[in-house]
Length: 418
Image (cartoon, rainbow, N blue to C red; front, top):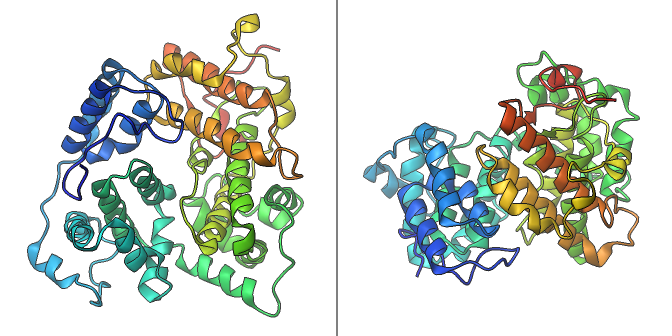
């Protein structure tokens, strides 16, 4: 049984895709994660996509060298982090990770992981709102860690996610709180009709499109939130989700994340590549509260604009011809054995899995106006990803584009033969 201090992955729980795994694979993942929690995303994604123990071992060995050594918690500070205490002295400081980790382990052992999340993350009080803004920092890594912990029901991973959240800076707090306040005010802009519609409005707004510059050291804060702060807040304030529409809006958000990642992979005349930053937005939100979904949508918009508002070329996705020619597979899942052989830090298989999950989530709503990827386009999206990264892996080339809306981001990508 999994506890806040022990990883225990069961063979009957291979994750949301539901692919069959055996006890050997489950035991391998359990042992590796008990040894090193920093490789959670890659190891669990490989396990959840049917990888063998040999593949899991190989991927782990390829990435273990750059992992940090575990720090020891400060017992006196752990005692001070009791419920109701002032955390301000310790928040946002990476050196306190181990201390927060032990604190949340103890809390989960005391009241369970669900109530721990309710108390320290979901609660609508000053500390809860502060933690919520930190959850979206670090290109959503604390959120992603949390979702893995919840998907595989691993209290230890959830404790790690909360600790990650606590030690990230709250740089997004002002933006998110300003957008929420604007959305609730008398001068609130019109509510969004669809999420993709917001992206279509972005490209029509010259101030937003030109707010991020390639040379900005931080394209969010030095770019968008400096040159177009009010415009960005007004756009984000259009994001409003009622609890009655939460299910469909969640599916729409997941679909749109896949749409943006897939559409932004094309930049003629270059070979397709997926944007590393946007790819991180393709994960399913586990939040049961509308404000979390609103914040996720707002953060997606902010990151999209910061990456240069790349054109979303779904026309090129529809026209894409996989390198397999007339030997294409019937199901995207059949590509996993090849994807597993791509040696990177796990982002290829994570995105492939995310695209497949997005397709499943979209299925009940496939006739809705917000749907942008349909039918065999989902399989093509996975092929675009695999074809590009198989080639890059074999040639030692660049796999990921960072900030796909800028021509400079594509300079290391080979041009396609026309």
